[in-house]
Length: 270
Image 1 (cartoon, rainbow, N blue to C red):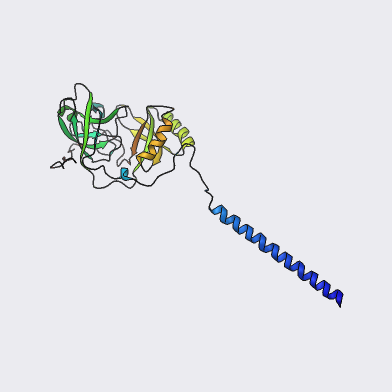
Image 2: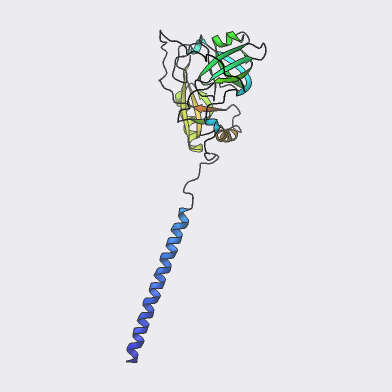
């Protein structure tokens, strides 16, 4: 009778021990899973800053915003070709190219040498030359007497803004442009492997060029972080707005091309 009681007690003890061990193992596994959920699964590629929340840079620039720098102009080689916004570039209309400003932004451009002004609408991207802030059409350059010198210091003032900004409003860093597509693709692939995102943008002209754009950021500030890194390798880089071209490039010039009219009255500069 005593031996039976001892066997029962030992058996009960073993069952209790096994149950306790099982509970401990399950608890440890759950804690491990809970811990792993808090660990970041993926980190950004080397040197690429993490995306930041949207900032006012994504909204149209306020009326009265100004900047100063060097202006240049472009004409015949690009006349009759598609601009970056998809419309036909007509050098005898009052339009211009800017690297960052939203399409359909109206600017008052003042030649700081003679005080002459002209109102232009942004339809294109450029100029991709260090130190220049705007490329004017030939008609616009003529009005402020910039045709002869070719370049000159100007002040830009926003006088009217587009009603909205596309939802795909992002910024990238242009590291170069190529006339040979294979060379551009090779550069794009190299930068994509190193920085995660890189794409090509076609630039029509006398000779088609392929621009290599690295990164895709929601703000100019976050794109500038990558630009600071890339400038150590090549100082001739630019921050540009990523745009979705509406119409594929073509050389045809419509017979009924008519420029959009500037604002009826310029809002006061704040």
